[in-house]
Length: 542
Ligand code: C2E
Ligand code: CA
Ligand code: CA
Image (cartoon, rainbow, N blue to C red; front, side, top):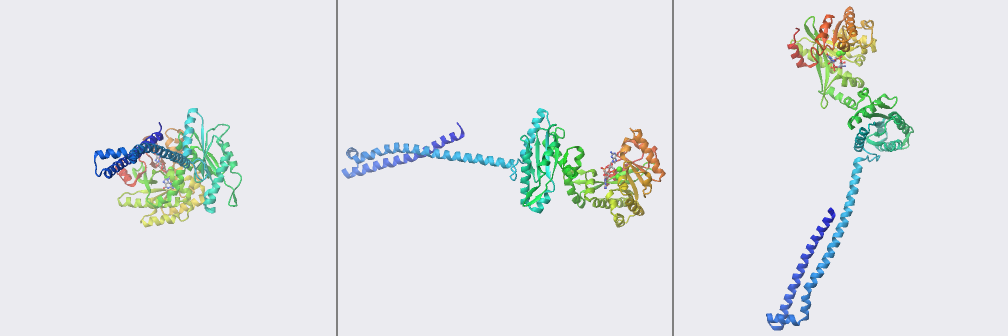
């Protein structure tokens, strides 16, 4: 018996009980009427009330017979009508329940549809797509085949939206969806992930259906101009693809990597399509978000400087340290410069960042000086900084506001940034040198510059790139390179710093080669200022 039937039987029983109750009331009333009518008639016929009189009127008066029959008629009729009414009422309830049930299930279906589909384009939405991708991954791992995930994003959609308004933007998105539907095969799922981003699940990826041939289909679909509100435009899309199992084993990784590829495709501009590879990670959306947050980080309190000692083994002193920036990101934790210096360079924020580093490190030297710790601090500057002619004035301003001279400062510039524009570099470096600052060529050995070129510059220090130092003990070639750089630099009157000194052996070897300063994890990693002080206090040269 299903639920509705058992409910029905219960309703019938309840209604019947209620009807029976009223039939009993009717029965009581009719019995009372019989008693009253009999007593009245008895009194009228005999002038009193007696059993004899009652018996007599009951026997002789046909009206009373009729009355006597009423309770039985009531009982039968009441039961009969009651049962019919109850069944009719229940049938009505059942009808309405049925209606309600079908209404509920169609509402449920609608809600289900709306939570799994995008209401602008009617395409599956992000949630349904995730589900389908998860299913496809399961099936593909059983059958040992590949699955492709393509993320497609329209180029410059924001501008179209801003210029023509959201209504036109929506109409364009609908048209794009229709075009994509036209080129997607039955076994492929097309979804709108949100905004102007679409995704396509390719369940069959092989030589007959490569991601690139798929992109050609998409490219063709978008080829003809679109027409919205009597304006015709060309809309281009960028597409990134990630493959299961090559680029990831789960939904989130695949989506994230397809997005990275898509961002790369967007920025490479030339072809609008990219297949994921780890080389593209620098285009990741996380980086793009970081880019937006970096200004806030510079202005706020999120950057911090760590200091790594440059150890002068020969003279047994530590009077130089390199300032290396860190970003204490509120949600990602401690970020290293490789994650954000490139971004800062691309967005022009590098000048603000460098100024912050200069101010902070010069302030720190002053604090150390006040504690009796004489420390020259090295600051890394990017190539872009060489293009701001006011840099020497900015540095002079910071130094004089702390009552310090340029001798407390070393400027580290990479070899590559100097040889990009040697004339400009020479100009600025001379002015910095005039302040009394040391100029150091960072990552030396990676930039293919000739020493002849560099000797014209007002440089005082050369840092051998850590890749040579790290491999020096394993590779004879690297050892020879390190030795020649040290000798050449000394011949030019320059000091030499070796960075990437990780072992006692390499430190010993570099000392034998007469290297002036040693920097690396063997001595210390970069530390926050107060930890640097502690390290410095306990360090011994034995
Ligand atoms: P860099 O100037 O070559 O700095 C040396 C990097 O090597 C630092 O990484 C340091 O922690 C690391 N290092 C030090 N000793 C060793 C070692 O023994 N072994 C190994 N494997 N690595 C060692 P970090 O701090 O991640 O900095 C990376 C790069 O970021 C720096 O390379 C520099 O180019 C850039 N950078 C850091 N701070 C700044 C800044 O304030 N401004 C600019 N423009 N660039 C910065
Ligand atoms: Ca450096
Ligand atoms: Ca370096």
